[in-house]
Length: 157
Length: 281
Figure 1: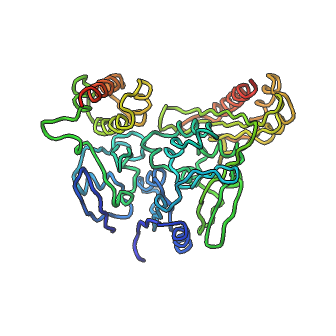
Figure 2: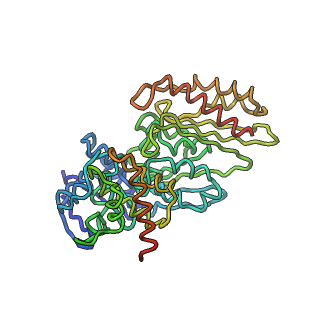
């Protein structure tokens, strides 16, 4: 067991982790932050996507100790009850979530995309979300939601 | 037994001292995107994770006319590099087709090479460019050709106390390069076949050629005979046709979940032909 110090969604945590633990296990099992999902556990599906020190990562293939001293943001960290993030609002508006399993990872991926490219083309959006599998929507509604979120965020604030 | 642990190496000296101490019990890790897949599925459980992501091994620089890339440089780092963009643009083409943004943000070029997958995408252009790798240990440094680095699936020539420090890529004059990756999905796709060809071309004549292929043998390979065949000749359609027919004996693909031996042989020939045509133009 080793001590891991990290900040998640603005809050400092110290947890004891086993040597084989990945960051997703720490978030879900140690901190009860459950928006990142266990999908494939191989880095293929994107359901566990979170942002670490400003960069999108897949938490299931990130060794927990790599997050030592770093700041992690999950979906829980970008909205407050009653006040959704503009990306969430857009997903809601165009019904870009069906079963919802991929949605937290998808939204974090979209956030990282829009943070670095506030006005992406359709191709850039499709490229940006290419590492996130969604088996319900066929992606059409997701792409539409990203466009709407980008427009709202550029015009709104 | 002290128990399993994760150690953050502070610099190269410390990393090689630890590697010397732990030997094969220490698994070098940067992003962990390959290692953790095996750890998550209980296929691997190293005594020691030796993390080198913050050990000063993330750099891309020009040294004596060569481009030198630190082993822990992330794939995103390569995509963002102005030096790569200006002098080795095909490397951007290759890296942009690996995995996805989230994986590229933490996965390193050194990890891609040391993981030694037969389908390692960065190995293919590096072999075509005649790149070298610098391996370091407490016993000293050695520089070996990229082609000599790979032994078989998951196996390299790295000794137990040794780490990959950097990759040295010579920048040659008059080189025309072409690359193609055949995958099954747009992102997160392991190559079915990948090919990179680099030709030194003068007045339409091929002075020197390198044809590198991934995912069609137990390790990334150079099709040396087909490349030799092109040397000193004009790259016309008839020559290209003949050269691509010579690829088959130089590869030994297998059937797996991504593609059959049959499709890999046919695709290899077709891709080599198309890339040579692109270069011949």
